[in-house]
Length: 122
Image (tube, rainbow, N blue to C red; front, side):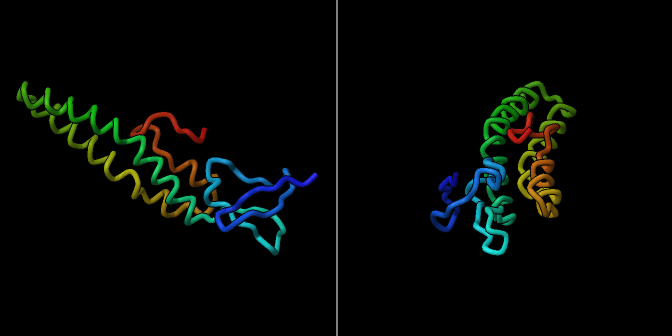
């Protein structure tokens, strides 16, 4: 049985066994040489970066509250910690692990759970 699957360039036919990771569906392309769907790693990186931006928004908002409380309490240590955390959140989409990833598995592993929380790709 053949399943019709749409890649980022149009509709193609593919056997169910050749369907790659659905998290990066918008990065799928049909590889004529392999007669299978593969992922465009550049497009997949952009998808991951967009997901990071989506997740970090509420985290930055929460950290703004922490910073304001530290500011009101004139707690220099808490302010510095909050500034550092917000910098890590802002820098997350530009992580070198994302840039250096050459497979979907490495790209999924580039999710920094210590900064962003539980990975949606686990």
